[in-house]
Image 1 (cartoon, rainbow, N blue to C red):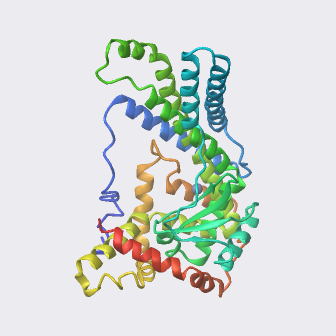
Image 2 (image 1 turned 135 degrees about the vertical axis):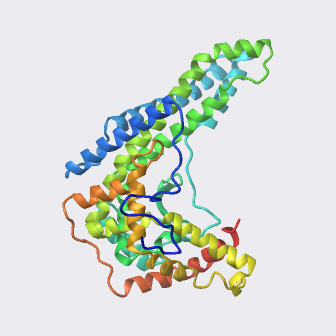
Length: 408
Ligand SMILES: [Zn+2]
């Protein structure tokens, strides 16, 4: 059994210690049933996506139902506002009706969908700040059948995502350097292909409608929650609100579950878009890298602790220097045996109950077993260095942030 002191020991023959961090399953029959259902749905979806080469970004039944419930929730908010306005206008001569009307209008305002905005505490790049990066994003976007983004936000996370901001719903790409910096150029194309694939498939519009409905329902549950140590009148109110409260809770749970199922399908399709842009191999490699996220975050914490305690002779002021290069070296030195352990651990954990992403081994299997795709977009030799130069200032700023914040 070869042992690398940086990683845990495990046995490839009997599977001993493959997944030492695995959580014990929750006891109880309901949780066991939820796990069984999640596993069944996960396996069913994986089989469907692997077999159906031509799977389109249409919504499956759970997606359509989630969309319908979400629209109904938003419809009820509009109805609330209209009812409030009517009470104010038509009941003007009375005292109570305008008061109730105003309360309803205020409630509708609280329940309305909101627009996200660009962060003001993170580096935000526009086209003129990073023309080469934006050109690459455009090229990958064209390969997956969509257009580029308005801004790129740089953060420290080992993650990337896309979003929509402002009233005009402009596209924003969030790039976490702890992921971007540990990828090879072609794996970065795969990452961009996956994220932009979500735009191409309309996942963001769907997520926006459903996400804001989930928030509205959570607020309903809060508003309708029974009073603690109630008076007689409040007790009466608690009983009267039993049905709407139960309805809000049920809808919240149902929508949450449906959303998870629909978004797992969207992830498989985004991986497929990524394979078209960057090649099947690049996506499989990217998914392997995603298995290392915990290890990458631990490495950043270690760097931060070393700098803050002065162990290793590195002072806090220059600890950010070369951070991303050291992180990339760390990831580059991970032996194939550790990847193999992580793949087996992912397989052993299987399809979990409450995640929006399918397990990594399933995504890898779906991509690898599909039709082999050559790369439409290739990073040429100069581009990675040009993009690194454009990212120089955010890299330094975010490295300092990691050293400052990650030890806690
Ligand atoms: Zn995704």
